[in-house]
Amino acid sequence: MLDVVDIGDRSLDAYRGVAPDEQLDELVRVAQRLRGARILHVNATSYGGGVSEILRACVPLLRDLGLEAEWKIIRGDDAFFQITKRLHNGLQGAPGELSETEKALYLGNAQLNAPHLAEGYDFVVVHDPQPAAIAGLVHHRSSRWIWRCHIDTSHPNPAIWEFLTPYLGAYDAAVFTLESFIPPRFPIRRVAILPPAIDPLSPKNLTLPKELARHILEWIGVRLSRPLVTQVSRFDKWKDPLGVVAAYRLVRQHIPHLQLALVSSMALDDPEAWDIYEKVRAETTDDHLIHVFTNLVGVGNVEVNAFQSLSDVIIQKSLREGFGLVVSEALWKGTPVVAGRVGGIPMQIPPGIGGILVDSVEECADALLHLLRHPQTARTLGASGRERVRQHFLMPRLLLDELLLLEALAVERAASAPTASLQLENEAESRLAGDVGH
View: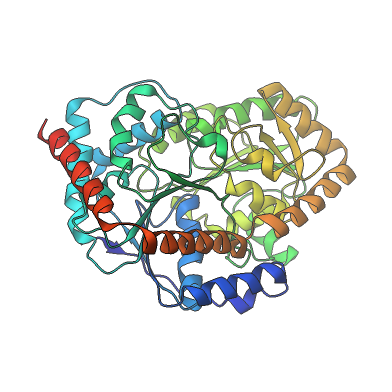
């Protein structure tokens, strides 16, 4: 069976006074029209990374709104996740190909998981490439299937894209963060552009009392008598942690006592993270002003909250990025951000709001130095960033957008001919059977 993720109860009323009232009111109206709908979210891990954080807030709020929502994760071994990490990187443009054996293992995993998606859902939302092939293997088409791609697939590796494309044709809709992320020759007709959002009431984003936040960071060895810059990210080459270290060292030439914290969460579906972690440790082990933390040494959401709240500047020096939830997390706390000009980051940090966008190690260092030397400018940018997040990037807005998409799919389904769905299912099954057989 697929593993069902345990989640707590949440109330939309708790967001009154936090998110804009007009968003909350409209969300309630749309949810009433969908009341009783059965929704399943499927992804590869219940912790580590933005998708799991979104679902941990999204699913219980859907239930509070009167929908029957569940969250399940697929099963896979280390070899499978090694392959899906290469698939993930290839979709973002990294070179390389999957061998025929690797393709068969990926599709075989989809065949193992597909039978456990029993009939009974009106909508199934599948997140990212790890479970993407499942839709074409399911023997019923009464559900509406949505593929939610959280990464930048604007320029995918042609070999990787050619492999995955046939299995996406079984979906009724797709969701991307930006229109520019839609890959070439995309096989899904209905596409929605829905930027992600943060949960302002999660332990990571609740307002921490300053003294408690200070105590937390001092407890784990950060000296708040010295300036501090932090990057909160998975250990991933696309997050460029070694580039962050290089930029930090340029700034240290001018601010000798500056501290850098690299704070990461290690996820089950990201085995490559360990390689990046070892490279970061090797590069920083002799520098006592660089702090490297992961969730495996007791640093969790509350500690991340403290870092984002008390750092002088947050860094997000991504080379590729789907959205970058950590940017909105930092801005929500009023902390300015220096970030790569990639993916969904510029929509969070438009000119003059929230922080500074950069394109190189040197630009990153210059921006950090400017904000550290001009704290009033930093505070003004942070305050404007918080208001932008409140208006555009909080969880109720995302839920509203998603439910409007589901409502449109339900209306479309009512008017569609069942023979088209049957033909689509048969074509997808034929392709999958042939590929796995190889």
